[in-house]
Image (tube, rainbow, N blue to C red):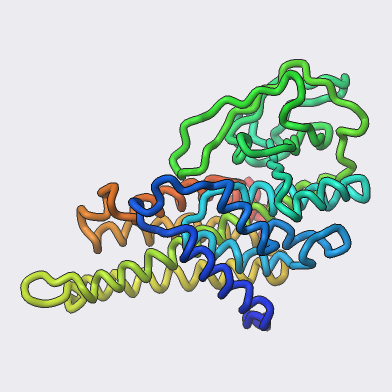
Amino acid sequence: MIDFRPSSAQQLLVSTAREYLRRHCPIEPDRRAGLDVIQLWRGMAELGWPGLLISSGVGGSDGTLVDVILLVEELGYAAVPGPFVPSAVAATSLLLAGGARQQRRLTELATGDRIATVALVEERGSFDPAGLTLTAASGRLTGRKLFVGAADLADDLVVVLRDGVVVLPSDRRGIARVPLQAIGGDPLFEVRFDDVEIGADDRLAVTAGAVAAALEAGALARTAEMVGAARRILEMSVEHAKTRVQGGRPIGGHQAIQHACADLVRDVDTARGLLYAAACDASDVAAAKAYASEACLTVARRAHQIFGAISYCAEHPLHMIHKRILAASLDFGDTTLHLERVARAIGLEA
């Protein structure tokens, strides 16, 4: 049996995150106007969050994936924008597998002085590395990667290719970043490579298993983000049901609203349980991501029914949280990709 109770250090991490984000990243749209993502990132770096997965020997916090999931759930609860998942989770996981040559880079990532991101998706729009076509076998790279998060802030691009992984400075000659339309609030980019030179020092000595593990860490982090966001929606919906008076009594007095709130609790608690089961034993990530993607979106849709038209207005935060859940559900693999992995794991291959 897995013990989900957080340690005292983890409880401190969560309480610190909750208080810091309450003060510096308000959920109300009018108070978020002008939010400085870089300033917010620097504050997070002072608390040691970007270095959670990095050892203290190179400036990190000696944390675990469970610590990261606890933190990212709070980031999701506060709808925090920025590069944490692309840089501190996915890219860091790959660079950690790259060995001693990456120590200087990891030290700068741990302190927040450096930001990295993973460039994976190609024309098929899939997060499955098996479908990659770009190569750098000739020592040159030409092509493009799509839906790259935090590319505008990143100092390094960790580019996953068919024939390996390369780490490129984002300002290298031949690299261009083109903004894409994005629904979730965090910018996404098309990264173009025009005959970019690839040297031996650019290649990251990692196995296919290390790539898969880093992408799973990213998927689990996005799952935590969705769970945190859905938990915020649950709290908002219950509070609204208690205080919104119509026909002389709170709408929460109606059985239909009570049933709807009960459904929210069920979906949030189940998604959260699968999340922490996957985080604690590093398995069933696909099941957790697939379930949370559907369940958390269902939470957002049902909450709109509880709130009514006000939740679609720019002045209300629900529509923003809903869009962030939708974006997270697609990042590091959508429901279809992860359900296919679950099917293969239990022997239901087509």
